[in-house]
Length: 118
Image (cartoon, rainbow, N blue to C red):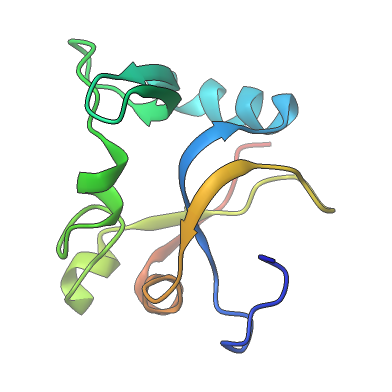
C-alpha cells in the first residue's frame, strides 16, 4: 500500500497514471495543456502523458525509468533544473497508476520551489 512507506516518508513519483481525480487533472491541465490522456502503441493502453506540440507522446518510461531522464536526475545540476509546485489540495486521493521511489527525496532536496498562481 502506498501509504505504508518505510523510507522515512520518501516522496513517491507517480507513473503511468490511468485515472486521477477530475479536480487534480483540471488544475494540472490549466498550466500544462499538453498533459492529457493518450493511447500509447508501445504499451498498448491509455494513460496521462506529456505530449509534444506535434502530438508525439514523450512516454513515461523514458521520463521516469531512464537515468538522467526528466524524473530521474543523476546529478545535482539536473535536479536543480527541476521545479516543484505544491498543488492546492489536501486529503487522500485515488490514483490508478504505478509509482517509483528512490529519486523523490533527491529531487525534493535540490529542485526549485515554485509558488502556485493564486
